[in-house]
Image (cartoon, rainbow, N blue to C red):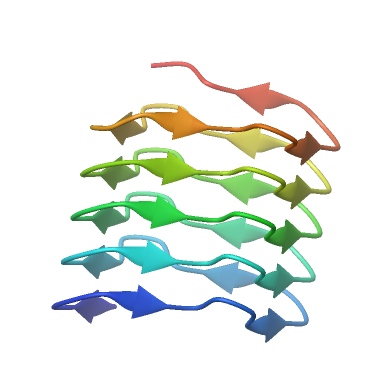
Length: 110
């Protein structure tokens, strides 16, 4: 998927697996309040500005490995039912995880 400007997925409901792997979003991406029933993959995605996942719910594993975010990344209040991987992710701004709940392990290895 390639989006020239911004992407709004806030409040979207997906019953099973969702893949945004290798997506290219030129500006910001909003996933706040999204509900994904199964695993979610964002691996290798590029987001030009900031990414907001506040209050999102992912039922299974959440993969953010290799993600490149050009600004702030907000994960406040996110709920992930399984493991969360941020291995090799690059966030140019700051990242906030206040109130996040991860049901499994979190991998934040460079």
